[in-house]
Amino acid sequence: MNPVPVAKPVLDEREVEAVRRVILSGWVTQGPEVAAFEEEFADFVGARHACAVSNCTTALHLALRAVGVDAGDEVITVSHTFIATANAIRYCGAVPVFVDIEKGGYNIDPDLIEGAITPRTKAIICVHQLGMPCDLARIVAIAVSHGIPVIEDAACATGSEILWKGRWEKIGKPHGDIACFSFHPRKVVTTGDGGMLTTANPEYDRKFRLWRQHGMSVTDAVRHGSKQVIFESYPELGYNYRMTDMQAAVGREQLKRLPTIIAQRRKIAKQYAEQLSGRSALALPVEPTWARSNWQSFCLRLSEDLDQREVMQQLLDKGVSTRRGIMNIHLEDAYTQTGLHFVASSLRESVLAQQHSIILPLFAQMTNYDLAAVIEAVSLSVSERDLAIERAV
Image 1 (cartoon, rainbow, N blue to C red):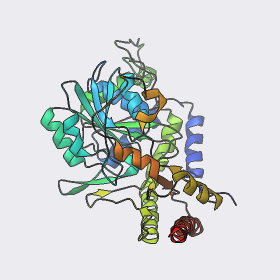
Image 2 (tube, one colour):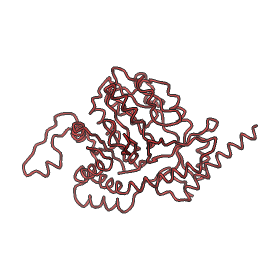
Image 3 (spheres, rainbow, N blue to C red):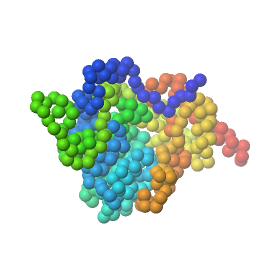
Protein backbone atom coordinates (compact mmCIF):
# COMPACT_ATOMS: atom_id res chain seq x y z
CA MET A 1 0.00 0.00 0.00
CA ASN A 2 1.27 3.45 -0.87
CA PRO A 3 1.67 5.68 2.19
CA VAL A 4 -0.94 8.35 2.85
CA PRO A 5 0.88 11.51 1.59
CA VAL A 6 1.29 14.63 3.69
CA ALA A 7 -0.28 16.78 0.98
CA LYS A 8 -1.85 16.52 -2.45
CA PRO A 9 -2.87 19.43 -4.70
CA VAL A 10 -6.46 19.54 -5.95
CA LEU A 11 -6.09 19.45 -9.74
CA ASP A 12 -8.27 17.95 -12.48
CA GLU A 13 -9.46 18.49 -16.03
CA ARG A 14 -10.54 22.04 -15.26
CA GLU A 15 -6.93 23.12 -14.79
CA VAL A 16 -5.89 21.08 -17.83
CA GLU A 17 -8.47 22.84 -19.99
CA ALA A 18 -7.44 26.24 -18.61
CA VAL A 19 -3.81 25.66 -19.59
CA ARG A 20 -4.86 24.30 -22.98
CA ARG A 21 -6.86 27.47 -23.62
CA VAL A 22 -3.86 29.65 -22.84
CA ILE A 23 -1.44 27.60 -24.96
CA LEU A 24 -3.74 27.77 -27.97
CA SER A 25 -4.19 31.52 -27.49
CA GLY A 26 -0.53 32.11 -28.32
CA TRP A 27 0.03 34.35 -25.26
CA VAL A 28 1.67 32.24 -22.58
CA THR A 29 3.76 34.68 -20.52
CA GLN A 30 2.50 37.48 -18.24
CA GLY A 31 -0.62 38.82 -19.92
CA PRO A 32 -4.42 38.84 -19.77
CA GLU A 33 -4.73 35.71 -17.61
CA VAL A 34 -2.37 37.19 -15.01
CA ALA A 35 -4.38 40.42 -14.99
CA ALA A 36 -7.62 38.48 -14.51
CA PHE A 37 -6.12 36.33 -11.75
CA GLU A 38 -4.92 39.46 -9.93
CA GLU A 39 -8.37 41.03 -10.11
CA GLU A 40 -10.10 37.87 -8.90
CA PHE A 41 -7.61 37.29 -6.09
CA ALA A 42 -7.94 40.89 -4.90
CA ASP A 43 -11.72 40.51 -4.89
CA PHE A 44 -11.50 37.21 -2.97
CA VAL A 45 -9.37 38.57 -0.13
CA GLY A 46 -10.84 42.07 -0.16
CA ALA A 47 -7.63 43.87 -1.17
CA ARG A 48 -7.43 47.06 -3.19
CA HIS A 49 -4.44 45.80 -5.19
CA ALA A 50 -3.00 42.38 -6.03
CA CYS A 51 0.17 41.78 -8.05
CA ALA A 52 1.17 38.30 -9.25
CA VAL A 53 4.82 37.22 -9.21
CA SER A 54 6.91 34.09 -9.70
CA ASN A 55 6.79 32.84 -6.08
CA CYS A 56 6.39 34.00 -2.49
CA THR A 57 10.12 34.52 -1.98
CA THR A 58 10.19 37.10 -4.75
CA ALA A 59 7.02 38.61 -3.31
CA LEU A 60 8.74 39.07 0.05
CA HIS A 61 11.78 40.60 -1.65
CA LEU A 62 9.65 43.15 -3.50
CA ALA A 63 7.64 43.92 -0.36
CA LEU A 64 10.81 44.64 1.61
CA ARG A 65 12.17 46.85 -1.17
CA ALA A 66 8.87 48.73 -1.39
CA VAL A 67 8.85 49.67 2.30
CA GLY A 68 12.44 50.89 2.02
CA VAL A 69 14.51 48.06 3.52
CA ASP A 70 18.14 48.48 2.46
CA ALA A 71 21.66 47.38 3.30
CA GLY A 72 22.42 47.48 7.03
CA ASP A 73 18.77 47.69 8.08
CA GLU A 74 17.13 45.23 10.48
CA VAL A 75 13.89 43.30 9.98
CA ILE A 76 12.18 41.58 12.91
CA THR A 77 10.79 38.11 12.22
CA VAL A 78 10.93 34.53 13.49
CA SER A 79 13.57 31.87 13.02
CA HIS A 80 10.78 29.27 13.15
CA THR A 81 9.76 29.49 9.49
CA PHE A 82 10.90 28.39 6.05
CA ILE A 83 14.30 29.82 5.19
CA ALA A 84 12.87 31.97 2.38
CA THR A 85 11.56 34.50 4.91
CA ALA A 86 15.05 35.38 6.10
CA ASN A 87 16.63 34.93 2.67
CA ALA A 88 14.45 37.70 1.26
CA ILE A 89 15.71 40.00 4.01
CA ARG A 90 19.31 39.20 3.11
CA TYR A 91 18.62 39.83 -0.58
CA CYS A 92 18.13 43.47 0.47
CA GLY A 93 21.45 43.47 2.35
CA ALA A 94 19.51 43.71 5.60
CA VAL A 95 19.78 41.56 8.72
CA PRO A 96 16.99 39.35 10.11
CA VAL A 97 16.38 39.80 13.84
CA PHE A 98 14.83 36.66 15.30
CA VAL A 99 12.34 36.56 18.15
CA ASP A 100 10.66 33.51 19.61
CA ILE A 101 7.24 32.03 18.89
CA GLU A 102 4.36 31.80 21.35
CA LYS A 103 4.49 29.04 23.93
CA GLY A 104 2.47 26.11 22.65
CA GLY A 105 1.92 27.75 19.25
CA TYR A 106 3.86 28.35 16.04
CA ASN A 107 3.51 32.09 15.39
CA ILE A 108 5.54 35.10 16.49
CA ASP A 109 5.11 36.12 20.13
CA PRO A 110 3.84 39.74 20.07
CA ASP A 111 5.20 40.30 23.60
CA LEU A 112 8.75 40.00 22.26
CA ILE A 113 8.52 42.39 19.32
CA GLU A 114 8.91 45.72 21.09
CA GLY A 115 12.08 44.57 22.87
CA ALA A 116 13.65 43.74 19.49
CA ILE A 117 13.07 47.20 17.97
CA THR A 118 16.18 49.35 17.43
CA PRO A 119 16.86 52.54 15.43
CA ARG A 120 17.77 50.23 12.51
CA THR A 121 14.45 48.38 12.46
CA LYS A 122 12.78 49.03 9.11
CA ALA A 123 10.08 46.33 8.99
CA ILE A 124 8.39 43.47 10.80
CA ILE A 125 7.59 40.23 8.96
CA CYS A 126 4.98 38.15 10.75
CA VAL A 127 4.44 34.63 9.42
CA HIS A 128 0.98 33.05 9.42
CA GLN A 129 2.53 29.66 10.05
CA LEU A 130 0.75 26.53 8.82
CA GLY A 131 -2.22 28.69 7.80
CA MET A 132 -2.99 29.85 11.36
CA PRO A 133 -3.25 33.66 11.51
CA CYS A 134 -0.92 35.64 13.75
CA ASP A 135 -2.28 38.01 16.39
CA LEU A 136 -2.33 40.85 13.87
CA ALA A 137 -4.26 43.27 16.08
CA ARG A 138 -1.43 43.34 18.62
CA ILE A 139 1.37 43.22 16.04
CA VAL A 140 -0.02 46.06 13.95
CA ALA A 141 -0.67 48.19 17.05
CA ILE A 142 2.97 47.84 18.13
CA ALA A 143 4.22 48.59 14.61
CA VAL A 144 2.03 51.66 14.20
CA SER A 145 3.19 53.08 17.53
CA HIS A 146 6.79 52.90 16.27
CA GLY A 147 6.10 53.85 12.65
CA ILE A 148 7.30 50.48 11.34
CA PRO A 149 5.64 48.75 8.36
CA VAL A 150 4.25 45.22 8.73
CA ILE A 151 4.69 42.62 6.01
CA GLU A 152 2.58 39.49 6.35
CA ASP A 153 4.24 36.29 5.17
CA ALA A 154 0.95 34.65 4.25
CA ALA A 155 2.56 31.91 2.17
CA CYS A 156 0.41 29.25 3.85
CA ALA A 157 -2.66 31.37 4.62
CA THR A 158 -4.71 31.79 1.44
CA GLY A 159 -8.32 31.65 2.60
CA SER A 160 -7.59 31.97 6.32
CA GLU A 161 -9.59 34.61 8.19
CA ILE A 162 -9.27 36.91 11.16
CA LEU A 163 -11.85 38.71 13.28
CA TRP A 164 -10.91 42.33 12.65
CA LYS A 165 -12.80 45.10 14.42
CA GLY A 166 -15.84 42.88 14.79
CA ARG A 167 -15.87 41.55 11.22
CA TRP A 168 -14.46 38.36 9.70
CA GLU A 169 -11.96 39.31 7.02
CA LYS A 170 -9.61 37.32 4.82
CA ILE A 171 -5.88 37.30 5.44
CA GLY A 172 -4.52 39.42 2.62
CA LYS A 173 -6.89 42.36 2.87
CA PRO A 174 -4.16 43.22 4.11
CA HIS A 175 -4.20 44.21 7.76
CA GLY A 176 -0.54 45.14 7.77
CA ASP A 177 1.02 47.08 4.89
CA ILE A 178 1.64 44.22 2.45
CA ALA A 179 0.73 40.52 2.42
CA CYS A 180 2.65 37.90 0.43
CA PHE A 181 1.23 34.55 -0.72
CA SER A 182 2.62 31.31 -2.13
CA PHE A 183 1.05 29.02 -4.72
CA HIS A 184 3.52 26.15 -4.28
CA PRO A 185 1.95 22.64 -4.56
CA ARG A 186 2.09 22.26 -0.74
CA LYS A 187 -0.22 25.24 -0.37
CA VAL A 188 -4.03 25.26 -0.42
CA VAL A 189 -4.06 27.04 -3.79
CA THR A 190 -1.40 26.07 -6.32
CA THR A 191 -0.29 27.31 -9.72
CA GLY A 192 2.65 24.88 -9.79
CA ASP A 193 4.66 27.72 -8.32
CA GLY A 194 3.84 31.38 -8.03
CA GLY A 195 3.13 34.19 -5.62
CA MET A 196 0.97 37.24 -4.99
CA LEU A 197 1.35 40.56 -3.18
CA THR A 198 -1.69 42.42 -1.85
CA THR A 199 -1.75 45.96 -0.51
CA ALA A 200 -3.95 49.00 -0.05
CA ASN A 201 -1.10 51.29 -1.09
CA PRO A 202 -1.19 52.18 -4.82
CA GLU A 203 2.45 53.32 -4.78
CA TYR A 204 3.60 49.95 -3.47
CA ASP A 205 1.56 48.23 -6.17
CA ARG A 206 3.11 50.45 -8.84
CA LYS A 207 6.59 49.49 -7.63
CA PHE A 208 5.78 45.78 -7.61
CA ARG A 209 4.62 45.94 -11.22
CA LEU A 210 7.66 47.90 -12.32
CA TRP A 211 10.23 45.75 -10.54
CA ARG A 212 8.75 42.34 -11.41
CA GLN A 213 9.47 43.00 -15.11
CA HIS A 214 13.07 44.24 -15.14
CA GLY A 215 12.01 47.80 -14.29
CA MET A 216 10.50 48.13 -17.78
CA SER A 217 8.58 51.39 -18.19
CA VAL A 218 5.98 49.86 -20.53
CA THR A 219 4.50 46.39 -20.10
CA ASP A 220 4.34 43.84 -22.92
CA ALA A 221 0.55 44.07 -22.96
CA VAL A 222 0.59 47.85 -23.47
CA ARG A 223 3.32 47.70 -26.11
CA HIS A 224 1.72 44.90 -28.13
CA GLY A 225 -1.72 46.49 -27.93
CA SER A 226 -0.61 49.95 -29.01
CA LYS A 227 -1.47 51.33 -32.46
CA GLN A 228 1.71 53.40 -32.31
CA VAL A 229 5.34 52.36 -31.98
CA ILE A 230 6.46 52.47 -28.35
CA PHE A 231 10.05 52.26 -27.12
CA GLU A 232 10.30 51.08 -23.54
CA SER A 233 12.94 52.32 -21.10
CA TYR A 234 14.45 50.91 -17.91
CA PRO A 235 14.60 53.72 -15.34
CA GLU A 236 15.74 51.55 -12.42
CA LEU A 237 16.93 48.09 -11.43
CA GLY A 238 14.29 45.41 -11.73
CA TYR A 239 13.97 41.63 -11.74
CA ASN A 240 12.46 38.80 -13.74
CA TYR A 241 9.76 37.96 -11.20
CA ARG A 242 6.83 37.45 -13.58
CA MET A 243 4.07 34.85 -13.43
CA THR A 244 3.07 33.14 -16.68
CA ASP A 245 -0.44 33.16 -18.11
CA MET A 246 -0.45 29.35 -17.90
CA GLN A 247 0.09 29.54 -14.14
CA ALA A 248 -2.50 32.28 -13.75
CA ALA A 249 -5.10 30.26 -15.65
CA VAL A 250 -4.58 27.40 -13.19
CA GLY A 251 -4.84 29.85 -10.29
CA ARG A 252 -8.16 31.17 -11.53
CA GLU A 253 -9.62 27.67 -11.52
CA GLN A 254 -8.18 27.03 -8.06
CA LEU A 255 -9.83 30.17 -6.67
CA LYS A 256 -13.24 29.00 -7.90
CA ARG A 257 -13.05 25.85 -5.79
CA LEU A 258 -11.17 27.34 -2.82
CA PRO A 259 -14.19 27.73 -0.48
CA THR A 260 -15.03 24.05 -0.96
CA ILE A 261 -11.40 23.02 -0.41
CA ILE A 262 -11.16 25.00 2.82
CA ALA A 263 -14.46 23.65 4.10
CA GLN A 264 -13.18 20.11 3.58
CA ARG A 265 -9.84 20.87 5.23
CA ARG A 266 -11.59 22.36 8.24
CA LYS A 267 -13.77 19.26 8.48
CA ILE A 268 -10.70 16.99 8.47
CA ALA A 269 -8.92 19.14 11.07
CA LYS A 270 -11.99 18.92 13.30
CA GLN A 271 -11.99 15.13 13.01
CA TYR A 272 -8.32 14.99 13.91
CA ALA A 273 -8.96 17.18 16.95
CA GLU A 274 -11.89 15.06 18.11
CA GLN A 275 -10.19 11.69 17.59
CA LEU A 276 -6.74 12.59 18.95
CA SER A 277 -7.73 14.70 21.97
CA GLY A 278 -7.23 13.52 25.54
CA ARG A 279 -3.84 11.90 24.98
CA SER A 280 -1.17 13.10 27.38
CA ALA A 281 1.57 12.47 24.81
CA LEU A 282 0.03 14.86 22.28
CA ALA A 283 -0.68 18.58 22.22
CA LEU A 284 -3.07 19.60 19.46
CA PRO A 285 -3.03 22.89 17.54
CA VAL A 286 -5.37 25.53 18.95
CA GLU A 287 -7.43 27.88 16.79
CA PRO A 288 -7.99 31.19 18.64
CA THR A 289 -11.54 32.50 18.82
CA TRP A 290 -10.50 35.39 16.58
CA ALA A 291 -8.99 33.20 13.84
CA ARG A 292 -10.20 30.76 11.19
CA SER A 293 -7.37 28.70 9.77
CA ASN A 294 -7.41 27.20 6.29
CA TRP A 295 -5.60 24.27 7.96
CA GLN A 296 -2.80 24.20 5.44
CA SER A 297 -1.20 21.75 7.87
CA PHE A 298 -2.17 19.94 11.07
CA CYS A 299 0.80 19.96 13.43
CA LEU A 300 0.99 17.73 16.51
CA ARG A 301 3.29 18.54 19.44
CA LEU A 302 4.79 15.36 20.94
CA SER A 303 5.67 15.05 24.61
CA GLU A 304 9.38 15.48 25.23
CA ASP A 305 9.85 11.80 26.16
CA LEU A 306 8.91 10.80 22.60
CA ASP A 307 11.59 10.75 19.92
CA GLN A 308 10.36 12.68 16.90
CA ARG A 309 12.25 10.62 14.30
CA GLU A 310 11.19 7.31 15.87
CA VAL A 311 7.53 8.32 15.88
CA MET A 312 7.73 9.48 12.27
CA GLN A 313 9.35 6.16 11.29
CA GLN A 314 6.69 4.21 13.15
CA LEU A 315 4.00 6.10 11.27
CA LEU A 316 5.75 5.58 7.94
CA ASP A 317 6.01 1.86 8.69
CA LYS A 318 2.23 1.93 9.18
CA GLY A 319 1.69 3.66 5.83
CA VAL A 320 1.45 7.27 7.00
CA SER A 321 3.80 9.98 5.70
CA THR A 322 4.64 12.91 8.00
CA ARG A 323 7.02 15.85 8.10
CA ARG A 324 9.00 17.20 11.04
CA GLY A 325 8.08 20.47 12.70
CA ILE A 326 8.91 23.77 11.02
CA MET A 327 12.63 24.47 10.64
CA ASN A 328 14.62 27.06 12.58
CA ILE A 329 16.68 29.28 10.32
CA HIS A 330 19.29 30.19 12.92
CA LEU A 331 20.31 26.52 13.14
CA GLU A 332 21.05 26.19 9.42
CA ASP A 333 24.61 26.46 8.08
CA ALA A 334 23.65 29.36 5.82
CA TYR A 335 23.00 31.46 8.95
CA THR A 336 25.59 30.30 11.46
CA GLN A 337 28.24 32.82 10.40
CA THR A 338 28.48 35.82 12.73
CA GLY A 339 26.55 38.87 11.59
CA LEU A 340 24.12 37.09 9.27
CA HIS A 341 21.35 37.36 11.86
CA PHE A 342 20.68 38.71 15.34
CA VAL A 343 18.81 36.91 18.10
CA ALA A 344 16.69 39.32 20.11
CA SER A 345 15.25 36.81 22.57
CA SER A 346 15.63 33.23 23.67
CA LEU A 347 14.45 30.95 20.86
CA ARG A 348 13.62 28.11 23.22
CA GLU A 349 10.02 27.67 22.07
CA SER A 350 11.08 27.73 18.43
CA VAL A 351 13.64 24.98 18.96
CA LEU A 352 11.24 22.84 21.01
CA ALA A 353 8.61 23.18 18.28
CA GLN A 354 11.02 21.96 15.63
CA GLN A 355 12.27 19.06 17.74
CA HIS A 356 8.93 17.80 19.05
CA SER A 357 6.36 18.52 16.35
CA ILE A 358 5.18 16.45 13.40
CA ILE A 359 2.88 17.41 10.53
CA LEU A 360 0.14 14.93 9.69
CA PRO A 361 -1.40 14.31 6.26
CA LEU A 362 -4.13 16.80 5.41
CA PHE A 363 -5.56 17.35 1.94
CA ALA A 364 -9.07 17.89 0.61
CA GLN A 365 -9.21 14.54 -1.20
CA MET A 366 -8.55 12.52 1.96
CA THR A 367 -10.94 9.60 2.16
CA ASN A 368 -12.45 8.25 5.36
CA TYR A 369 -10.07 5.33 4.93
CA ASP A 370 -7.06 7.70 4.76
CA LEU A 371 -8.22 9.58 7.83
CA ALA A 372 -8.86 6.41 9.81
CA ALA A 373 -5.44 5.05 8.82
CA VAL A 374 -3.68 8.18 10.11
CA ILE A 375 -5.63 8.32 13.37
CA GLU A 376 -5.07 4.62 14.01
CA ALA A 377 -1.34 4.88 13.29
CA VAL A 378 -0.91 7.86 15.62
CA SER A 379 -3.00 6.22 18.33
CA LEU A 380 -0.97 3.00 18.11
CA SER A 381 2.31 4.90 18.35
CA VAL A 382 1.11 6.75 21.44
CA SER A 383 -0.23 3.52 22.97
CA GLU A 384 3.14 1.86 22.43
CA ARG A 385 4.77 4.73 24.28
CA ASP A 386 2.32 4.49 27.18
CA LEU A 387 2.86 0.70 27.38
CA ALA A 388 6.63 1.18 27.45
CA ILE A 389 6.26 3.68 30.32
CA GLU A 390 4.08 1.25 32.27
CA ARG A 391 6.63 -1.54 31.81
CA ALA A 392 9.44 0.73 32.97
CA VAL A 393 7.51 1.60 36.11
